Structure formats: C-alpha cells, structure tokens
Amino acid sequence: MSNFLRLVEYHIKNTLWKTFGLFAKKNVPLVPLPLDFSKITNILVVRSDRLGDVVLSTPVYESLKLSFPHLKITVMVNPIQGGILEDNPNLYKIILMRRRRFWRAIRESRKGKFDLAITLNKKFSATATFFTLCSNAKMKAGYLHPQNPWKYNIRMPLEGPENHEIENNLALLRHMGVPKIISQPKIYFNEIDHQKTEGIINLRKKEIPLILVKTGTRITEWGWSWKKFQSVIEHILKNDIADIWVINGPGEEAGLKYQIAQMKFKPRLLPLVKTKELALLIEQCDLLFCNHTGIMHLASAVEKPSCVIFKHGEIQRWGPRHPKSVVLEERNQDNLTPDTVIQTLKEILNNNGRSIK
Image (cartoon, rainbow, N blue to C red; front, side, top):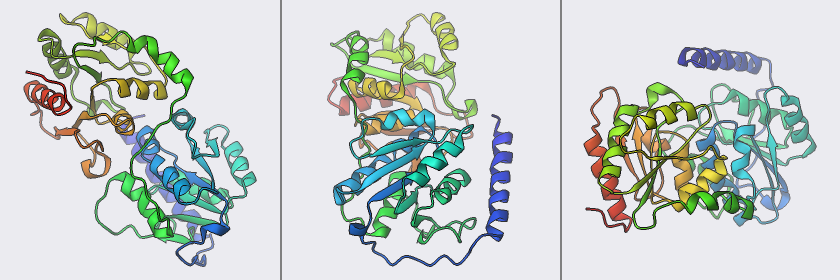
C-alpha cells in the first residue's frame, strides 16, 4: 500500500470514529485509582499493530503477572504477530484479530468476560479502540485521545515527556497502580524452536564474529540503499572482520539472491524462517545491522546489540534498547557513508568483547 493510500485510510478511520463518538455515551464515570487488583481476574490487552509494537508490549505482561500472579492475561494481536508471543508464560490466551473474520475476535473477547481491557496505543488507533470497546470489559484503560474521550473510564493523559514506546506502555500500568515494573522486552522459546535453528547456527564460523544484516524495510524510501549495504558487507568479508548472514524476508528471496550473485565477496543468505526462529538466530549472533524496522526490537528482546539506520521515525520512541546499540541517522540527505558504518560496526563488536582491528 502506498504512503498516499495509508494516509487516506488513516483519515477515513479517524473521521468515522469521530462521527461515531458524536452519538456515543460521553460521560463514562471514571474508576477510582489505584485499582484494586484483588477484585480483577481477567485482563485483555489490545495491541493491533506491527512486530515492533508487539515485542515492546511484552514488559506489560511481565509486570502485570509479577505484581499480581492471579491474573489471567489475554492479548489480542494481528495474526502475523501472534507467533512471537507463543510460549509466553505470562499469557493465558492469544486472540488473533483477522480482518476477514474480525467478528470471531469480537466473539472471543466477549466470551472472556474481562474485568479490564487495556489499549496500549499512545498514538490513536481506530482498530485497537474498536476491539477494546467491543470486548464489553467492565473497565477500559488507555490514552485519552480527542477521538475517544467518551470511551475510557481509566484515562491516561497524552501530555508528558517524549518516552520510549516501552515506557509509554508501562506508564499506563503505573497510572493504574501496578507496583512491580519490568522494562526488558522478552521472547520465550521452546525446544522445537531450538531444533529448527540448530542446523543453521552450526554453520557459523566460530573464530570470527557473526553479523546478521537486514537490508529491507516495510517502505523502500525508509531504507538505506542496497549499494551502500553491499559496500559494507564486502569490506567486512574481504578483510575477514566478521562472517555475515543476510536475513531473508517474505517476497525478498529472489531479489536478494540476484544481488548477492553480483557480489565478489558473498554473504550467506538465510532461509526464510518464522519470526520467533529469527529472534533465536539473532540471539546466537554477535550483532544485528539493519534499517529502522521491527526486527531491531527482536535484538533488544534477546539482549543483543544492534546498529540501526534511521531514515525516518522518532529515535526517542522507537530506538533499540540494548545499551551497546548504536543509531545512525540519514534523514533527508544522502550523507551516511559506508566507511562510517563499518567503523561503527567494528566499535560495537569491540565493545561487546570481540577484538577487532
């Protein structure tokens, strides 16, 4: 979908939602805070957006369950993102919101008889707001947007300092009185995940570091050029600084194979794997190098450093969380050179205990 169509879709959703709000009940009585969680059992958390958003929501489940072990936490996410939450011991259930069968998600959420539904989106989401409303939860919590002043009886003001998305999510919990807060995102793996990736991991060269590279991004204009990625990759391979594996994505394999075939020093192209398996592969490497994309949050969740190129987006809100990660900016000008990136990658590896000249 083009940027123009996304913009049109966004404005249509907002307009429809504002119109709906004109006819909705506006004076919802507020719930006294802090909440008495001893009287709450079933919680629904709605996170209707992309990979990074879902990964960065995992501290919410950790914090709720640590603070109140009796809670049954259900999360509602897009089907594409559901797999990354599998095996999470803090979750009671995962509801998938399929576009063509959205009524099933609504029916499941109403069957849950939720005491509390939480919308995590600090930026207004018509989709998340709709599903939270349809849940029929006794209490509904979320950020107070102009589009939904009538919807929540637990309201978090939008005003405040610019924070990372993890902190935006956790601010809602603090607002409700959740005492024990965990800010580290986390992904849980099972034995099958390890078995599926073991054969790939065994191919790595043990004597030198391993860098995983993701060259693609959701919108082409948001990514660093392939030509520059190629320069970095070939220099590192030529000088035996590290081994490099290129991450494969849906619809990318043919193009990546063609590009790699033209290179004198060729990286390994990873097979297409599930998102959770990719996270496990990132856990086994030394460094992730990528554009601003949700995959960088997988590295944060498995506590690996990353070097991320930002051509768009808010670094304060969406940047990688690992303390040894580095963000390199290239906004409106083509001014980030491969030499700068190469030097940065070497510094990160050195700071991470891998001696690089």
